[in-house]
Amino acid sequence: MSFNSSDFLIFFPIVVLIYFLIPQKLKNYWLLIASYYFYMCWNAKYALIILFSTIVTYLSGLALDTLQQRSADPLITRKKKIVVAISVLLNLSLLFYFKYINFAIGILGNALSVFHIQLNLPSVDILLPVGISFYTFQTMSYTIDVALGYTIDVYRGNTCAEKNFFQYALFVSFFPQLVAGPIERSSHLLQQLATPHKFNSDEAKSGLLLMLWGFFLKIVLADRIAIFVDWVYGDYHTFGGWYLIVATALFAIQIYCDFAGYSIIAMGAAQILGIRLMENFQSPYLAVSVADFWRRWHISLTSWFRDYLYIPLGGSRCSKWRKYMNKMIVFLVSGLWHGAKISFVVWGGLNGLYQIIGEILQPLRDKLVKLFRLNRNSIGHKAVHIIVTFVLIDFTWIFFRANSFSEALTILSQIIHVHNPWILFDGSLYNCGLNSKNFCFMLLCILLLFVTDYLKQKKICIREIVARQDAWCQVLIIAFSVVFILVFGIYGTSYDASKFIYFQF
Image (cartoon, rainbow, N blue to C red; front, top):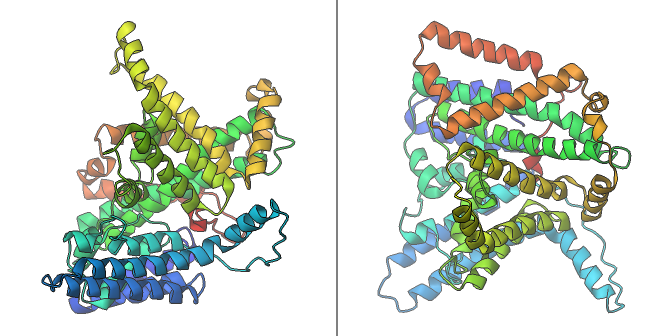
């Protein structure tokens, strides 16, 4: 069940209504049932996979808690490492089988072919469970490999191991953030789930406004941009040069609106239920460097890799070249997390390489700033950095959007060798799925997005401004937003809701 489907528009109000009507002690059980139903709407068998991951990590938490009480045992540390290693390996095995088995078979076959060894292993016909990369990372953050120097929420002592299985199962499967994050930590979400919440009208209105903004980003903007991007990328041999440049720039906005839209809807839905999820995006395209971009983009995943991979590898507390290696490992793994394709790995590697080059060139940039007496706080200086950062990030999106690494190289060749700047002015862009009115409307919506992000960066919260208005004004704003989304949203035949991009991960 997708957020932008008619089914969800029926499902969610029912869940909320029953949640606030039933007794306190039944609320979490109701949310657990609703969450599993929500997930099983894609495929009922998927529930067995998430249940397996839940049971494994729940038992590992209990085992760690039991071992913690035996402080006199001289083998306590070794036993903890064994418990956590088993838990992590089982979860990674689950993820590997469903997501990477065919990729691994292909890599192995190519490697053996170098030595003239023919590997005749058939590809495995597996349907990737929706959101498996998200919930397995969430469960592994609860119990992760101590033996190799990792830390975990339970092991740090930030939170005790959850004794109530049903409450822990709700932490893993909580439907607003189950399929595409944010990837929550147990120390944050479990504590909120421990106490069922009562209805709060202010929280509900704020959550509803969040959901409407998320729907705007997805249905009005992302899905409208997708028409143009799919048109051009779907026939990149015909639409070369500036067609592909424009489509790639628009894809950067599309994936932001699509993914941030999901996260914001998730935050809003959870807030209506009285639960606060972490913010996953902080105006990323206003970043002044690639490193700054990754502090603002998909924050829950970036922080996960920082805490559970980068720091255990040594982080920045080591030699300069080892630090650079650690960053490359993190971004290569991040690319692989997104998909079992070489193109994703290249995408991640480029983002890591940008940051390494940026750090190496930092002393030279500092000297140039001093030499030319530049003001780093000036609007012009920041604007140049924002534009350069966007261009660098946008280049990497080519590898993310292309269906394969070879296709990405062909698209790059088409961009470089086809020179047709006149299409920007002669109306040719209006022949790529969007007519002139829709194209101009899309640009206006993108401008609205950047204005909103700028206000957010300046700590100006539009929802708080709306909350200070009279009740009739708030109702009018919400009603107008709903009508606007219904009128200007992009819908398929018979309301065939388009999937969120990150569902495939």
